[in-house]
Length: 199
Image (tube, rainbow, N blue to C red; front, side, top):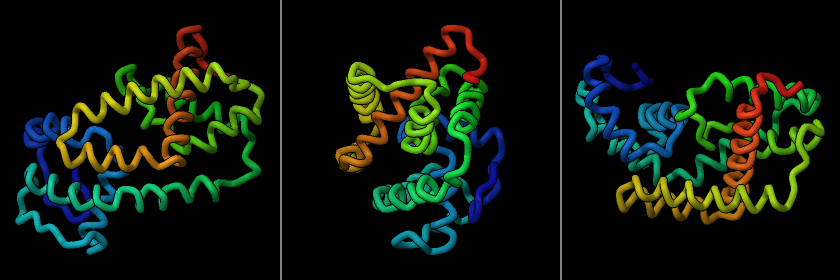
């Protein structure tokens, strides 16, 4: 595993680091990790963290600490692809593509963070007629979202937990999380029914 601006890391080293990274930074996606280290390499964080040719947990922690401070700003920036996604794409094709991706994940990997472009996908599901979201669906998703957020907070250190709470308290971010959770629950229901396609 190599990322821009990072020293090479062996499989053995990753085996040692991965449990610590998952424990303290499990809320971040792979894309966010890549972005964090790219930003560090290109001096887009508040300061440049040097790795001194060693991919250590201290190095990862320092980079992610600075990235976390900008998490709200970065997440707002990452919402832009949702707005610029080609509007002529068939909603059913969007939903089917995302469902196929979900099917390929291992059960333990099917977390709401894996639902990309949550708002656009939510709208595509409605537009396709494949699922009509009800008030009960919304309440169920909100309840589950709270459980998952508290679960994530329980795995974090104090600084990360504080930043995460601030992030999810943003109304737009909380709406997106609820939608991501609602979609994840629906996808899982479809899998339980034995469906391998939604078309």
